[in-house]
Amino acid sequence: MLHAAALRAILFNDPLRWQALELVRTLQRPDCWIGAGFVRNAVWDHLHGRPPGPPPNDVDVLWFDPARAEPSEDTTLEATLRSHQPDLAWPDLAWSVKNQARMHIRNHDPPYASSADAMRCWPETATAVAVRRTGPGHCEIAAPFGLDDLFALILRPTPSFAGDKHAAYLQRVRTKGWLAAWPRLRMQPAHIKP
Image (cartoon, rainbow, N blue to C red; front, side, top):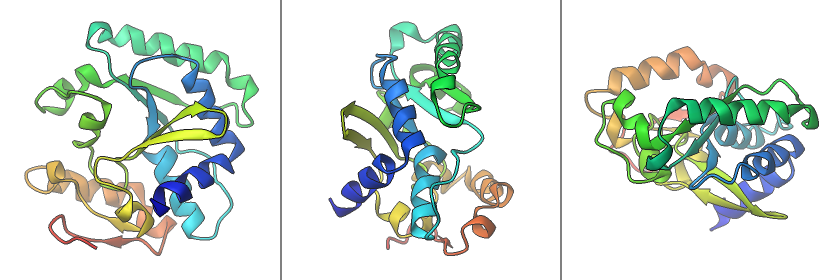
């Protein structure tokens, strides 16, 4: 509960992220969230005593609707978000919208049942977190692995990346440069809990 309240406060006190969450809410898509680095990096910056930094290279918007699984739906939503960007403090956000109802094909997973179910197949537990605005001053959190690793600054592969995909997880950690950017991060194997 404490981590959820802390995450809400971090996002609420970051005007750009809070405004981006509101913009995504106006899309009115089912099971629609902003996740991954948008959330993770904000928390890691906060825990390193830094002011809010810009969102990562792409802002991951995930939603779930099997009836609208064509990629063109996502392209249209990205264009809608870009058309409203002049309202944002940082107008060069790179929106990456993906309907999770079809992403299992690209990821070679069984079909997902929801956005949160899709996040179970993301590489790191600290990345598998998403948020959405639910009203003025309020947001909801989806975190299938909880928030403990995120707030403990732990990099841990999800079960999906602990076996055959583990090398991809390790490569991702290296290429992202997270350990250099946030030096208090600690890597932990999948089977060890904090």
